[in-house]
Image (cartoon, rainbow, N blue to C red):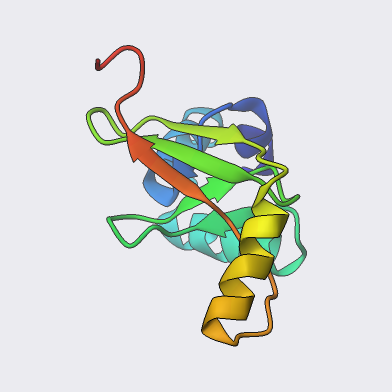
Amino acid sequence: MFQVILEREEHLTANEIFEAARKRLPTISYATVYNSLRFLKETGLVHEINFGDGASRYDRETERHDHAICTGCGKMVDFDLPEAAELMRAAARKSHFKPESVHLTLRGLCADCR
């Protein structure tokens, strides 16, 4: 199952991971997928992304990075914005929070949907 996540560029949902894994292991269950995903998250091998608009997605890239999401087709793309660190410091000053992390999400239309 971890191999499925590593081989794919997309940020897959648990259901998409299950469907891909079932092609390799026809007897795999949803419970096995969810238990494996929990283990992979706890060990830091995958990162769970939840934007509050549906199913969680799983990312093989666990280092800090940002995402662009197409509001038309749902495509999700990774990118790194080095200026995010300064934005985090500015947000911390304004909110009086001690920052732990910042992840930017750009929502808009991808090139295919424009």
